Length: 147
Image (cartoon, rainbow, N blue to C red):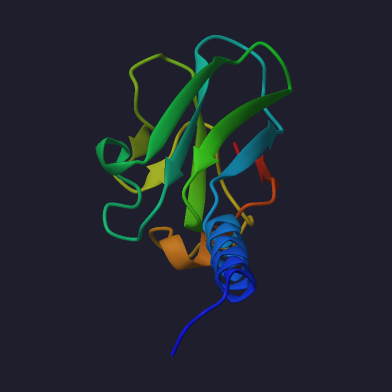
């Protein structure tokens, strides 16, 4: 079978469009997280981004962490060029600057804290209850701190 120049050009054009659309479906996305309900004061608001359930709640297993001075009632963190997938956010007011969410009796937060999607929490928070999708389009999440 012989192909003429037109057939080859059509095939290559289709291949290029398919590659382009395939790339667009897997393009990186941006996430903007606004943390509200902060009681301004000393320390920082830590915005911790997780990309999997394994290691959720363990900051050393996070995909990214941002620390923003807690001088206002609301702060914003941007996470750029994220691979498509599911993510969840834990935010907390690290008032004493020790780099962790302090707990009373090892279970109850003694500093302001919040989760993406603001799920009702009975026991340790779970990734799935706070998870949301990030794709090529910008995503905006609001996390409300609970003190």
